[in-house]
Image (cartoon, rainbow, N blue to C red; front, top):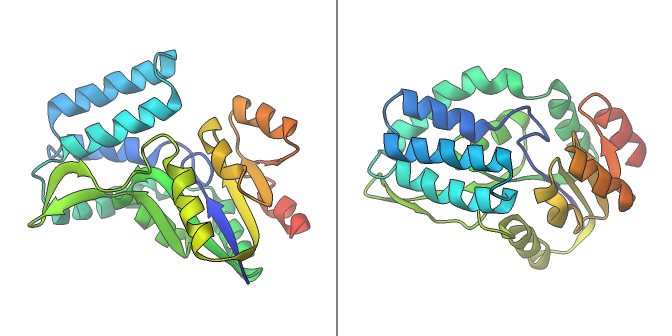
Length: 228
């Protein structure tokens, strides 16, 4: 049986939120609706003040993300994603490359599972050499975005549901999961080896109460090498 490793991206393998940075990029390029951009900024403010939970923010982010690109050509968005990603690459932790390589050397099938936009999460996964990527995909018709997501990763429990589907489809001898926020606790609870990587204070406290492993970008490769 194969082994599998599920990896979050934002905060776990890189600093910052790649999809929010890409949102700024497409808005500046004038292909994202101004009213939806303002709505996104309002949602982000509500998250920071605690008016929105992380799960509710993800849900609304996914819906508004899709609405803001309605009518835009996916080819144009893909072109902008490639341009944007070249500038974002330095945000990826250098150890993330070593981490993915270490997992693959130990025969793990690597899977990125992220609420983020597929346009940029896919590029990040490819850059790191990750085998498979699951992220928020927008519906398209005749080459244009329709204004709707066609995946449910942005919905509460979406990441867990996707991972459970994968685990039901095939038996794995060992499961590793890595995440950085309390939104990743469901994913981590499904793993044989749960790793809070660059965790928020909330996740670190929860991880220690569960006796999960806690690492940072500076010591993850050495720490995981011992575990493997």
